[in-house]
Length: 208
Image 1 (tube, rainbow, N blue to C red):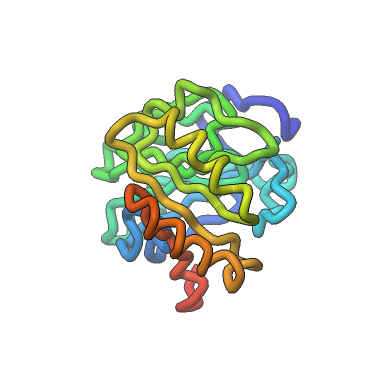
Image 2 (image 1 turned 90 degrees about the vertical axis):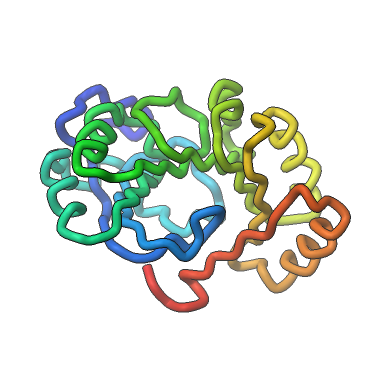
């Protein structure tokens, strides 16, 4: 499967990795969660920390039933689907099977591909390299904008204006520039209290 081709097979998906940990970012930070990272991305952020996920063909096709069975062996009942860009794939079967096992389904997406699957929580993290679709901006529960430089604040406001009125707003320093960006985010939030700081606590406490 080409990295740019939406996977229409709902029975198997290209799996890069899966692991049980805590959610390190955003609204559900600190909660136990099972992560399913799918291969394939057509966004290509230069500062991406999982570039190995970009080429879906490098990762094995794994049955949805097997993914969910392994997730269900753990006590946590939040399943976070991430990537890469998970919406390159049809996620209807995956979310349906997860719900049958009692999971809350969360997705982390750039919003650049059409939505599939049934989601209890949608985290939209828009990227400048490929803009999110307006329809995903409207249904996101959480907008998480990575701040790489000072101009990103205005860019964050652009997508906050497109989000629904109940969407949670987060600013997150890009990890390699966190020492420089975190103080700027702190000051920005003090002036714009509708925003909240998101820190990648999993990196600070050294868990996946």
